[in-house]
Length: 360
Image (cartoon, helix red, strand yellow):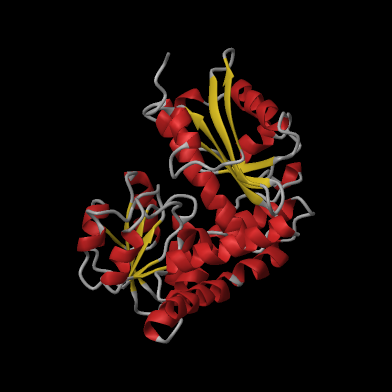
């Protein structure tokens, strides 16, 4: 008999990563599609979350990422006030090499087979044009182009929400929501990061950036010579006088190596799953670093794609995303009153809403 104690089944049923309602492993041999669709909760409504296309080292890593991301979406959607549970899908492969129309259509059919329990959208490695293709096979697709009945690029409101969370963090930490004159380090200036830089520059913040893609850095610094670039994230987090650190790339940015050397007083960024493991949130609090929970402040994008299901209205979505400022302050206040880190306070609020949804 095969020992699965250290395999995928152990992750699904016995580990702290488990507890999901449904996990679907998808394979389409003709297109090369290999994907994992994870539904964490549908207590508040159909699971909603993006599709990540990424060259995972192996299938176990892909499953673990899907599970973590899906759980994060449940909490994000709950605190964003959406009538949606949390789900996420990951496609295993290099999007630059492996993404084809045939593969995206096959993925659309896989999502459609769930009958509306999962609503998909864009994530790392997938774009509006990809969702237009997926939507040809799957009615439960958001993040489509305006020409195809969608809302377009959700990174615009994601960045706006992070900006509101950052303003709330400044209010809590320094008594003033203004970021003028504050030194902000942005790690990752892709779809969301570059919009965030725009908001910060407009307010008069001092910006330091880094990205693994030299072209992305060059585009920012040529357009905004006042922006400073550093070689990598290791250099960024050690920048002298840094007020705010904004992780806007992949998860796990806050870990046992980075937290002890972080110079910033506030962490507020767009990346999902920033805390590498349980306990990191306490390490941040012990150092006096204020952490704005990632799934709270980066909810602008999911607010946008959820609205697409009801006839998209940008102004309505922006008003909802602006409330991230108040939600973030509420979490900081709850954390102080309960004597816990903000991440724990956010989890408690989200779990309370999900529990109320189950009873309704």
